[in-house]
Length: 232
Length: 231
Image 1 (cartoon, rainbow over the protein chains, first blue to last red):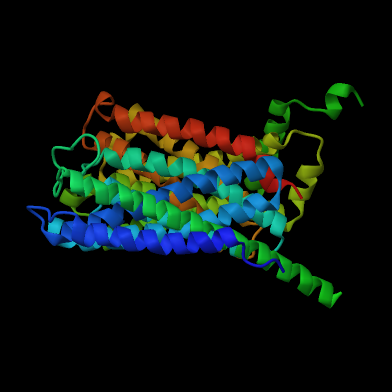
Image 2 (image 1 turned 90 degrees about the vertical axis):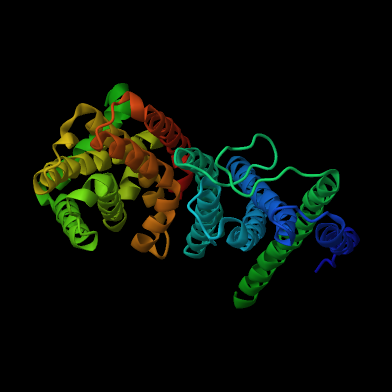
């Protein structure tokens, strides 16, 4: 069995360090928002986790396409890793968003396009794992998984566009501001530092977790092969 | 055997599959009667669950109808694919010297026909039961057709996948509903607007999205259908 690569160990340490710095920037360094107060600090991690959640979704769809073209199981492991890590981050995004929404919107949940799309995306991820669980043949599992991530990757943006037809109250902090949005604010330069660092930190953490999960997938496969060899 | 006969055209093969499905269904009427009775039961249940009095009815009619179609559609999709799988017909179809996409289009068209026939009965029944005559405007029927096409396109692909898994029938709605949410929402939005008395021009945005979804989710399954049937 190959031992853990040194680069991965270094990345582990870097991940912990940047998470620490990002926490400091979000909780201490960034100024308190004038209207919402301290609860606005949730925003930095909310955006960070949402960004990598989306990144994972795109990575999975691309890995799915590459798998369907190359039929190399390596890309299947890549895809599973992306979906799994991104499921967790998306869940965190939703939880963090709810924590913020309770004081800002006076409700934990509302059927806004972003929230609804996030919930549906999470359901697509769960369906993806249920689909994989029901198939024993690894090659078929990979094919079906790739097809499903592709369908999900195309359907999620359309879902977002359709729900947009109904009104939105979710603030758009980057780019244009919707008139009906509640709890919007513009960032000061210190806030921007915390914001961009959070994006950077979560990207590093995402890569680190992906790497671990891909490695785990490879090991899993090896164990399965060894078991097969033993029983023969 | 002539060369033409050994390699039927895409259209010819597609129509042959549609013909086979319709003939089988015409003799047994299993699928159709199940979908129809189920749809009527769902509408009756909604009547009591939502207390469909005259006020509520206008606003929820589109939602009730599309929920019914979606549920009945899953029933039909499951059955139509399970039959192919159980009786080993799928292997026969795969062995046939035709393009795989003919199988997809053939199954999709026959599924669509079943769904449209059920809708053609459920809509008048709904109209009579709830005195909702706006259902019969051409724009509304067009929206029903567009919504059904999008739903069946993805549904045919996903039911082909789900019958090959261990969970089979149980899995289809779980796979299908999150992917078809855009088509259901757009259809509800458009048909709800039309029932409320809006012009076609006023619901053009959801209708455009419906058309967009239909094009994408007919083209994509066509391109990747090969990957879900190869053995």
